[in-house]
Length: 150
Image 1 (cartoon, rainbow, N blue to C red):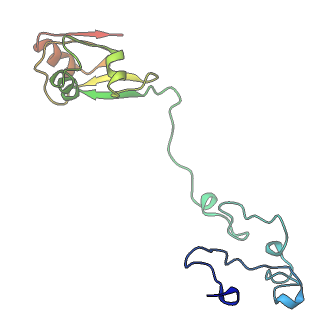
Image 2 (tube, one colour):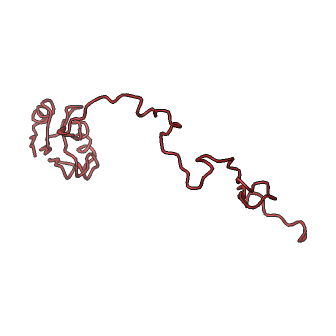
């Protein structure tokens, strides 16, 4: 090996960019490989998202539908089986409140919680939440617990 045949190690160089607009001798001078005229040849050109070359875009061709009720109240649903799992894993003993649910990532601090009747509850629990379904409330009371609405 000597200075006349040095070359970088395999895979160490990555630059394969065209050097455009560097004179006619380079073969990429003049229009700098952008063609002639038109928006795409200009600097600062960027196509708008959804632009279809002047054709009416899909988002405007398809009709609007549906309805969003602005007064709807969203609840994070938690099944009885999840409460039973808390008891089984030792995260709760005699009561489950909102703070316990947030600690165990069953809800976030900004959500409203609704206890649902899925699964079965064997433990006697005092459950505190924003809402209960009728079946959940009945199941909690049947297990000897108490359902407290916030």
